[in-house]
Image 1 (cartoon, each protein chain N blue to C red):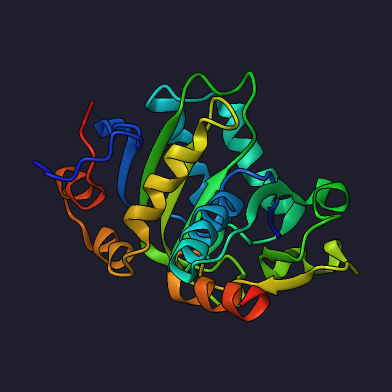
Image 2: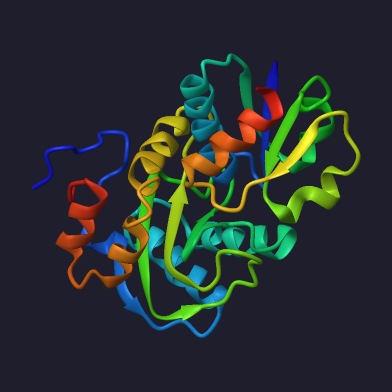
Length: 155
Length: 90
């Protein structure tokens, strides 16, 4: 489907994409991303809780660009393999970020090992350095559309 | 020269900053090592750095340093990051 597939982004199976999730607050939004990482086989539910802990500890810095949160925790026993999930929110959610609120798209990232993950990070930059990507993801109505925007395959 | 990018775990947002700072250096024709690190290790990692790129949330914890601490608002804005690197090192 995409001619510019980026092999260093993990595939996005259907279980790794949640469209129009209802989330009352940022914890609930991260909870949806954590559950998708479990459903897609990348991480345990403890990893999802650790993603919330990162924000509890350090604040809403994970909202790294307008409307977009990049949620993740540290590599470790709770990560089965590299994984990425995409969650779009039915209603924008405030994370308390000074510049980039409200959030419409949450990415959940599981990293198996430090070092090798930089290929994945560079591939994310290739996609999201285009400022139109977050609003296009937020407006996507099918999982195939999300995969096309991200330039990734289902498996 | 050395640039350190800082976030909570040294993986995600600091990784994005590292990648985009390296692209900025290449665009500007400048050379520097760019190291991503978690805020807990900023003292040792940034000891010999000229520039720290980070989010507003970490500025207080980073505290006083010899390096210029620059807040990046949009980690995916290559222009914002290129301007910051140019101001600091150019």
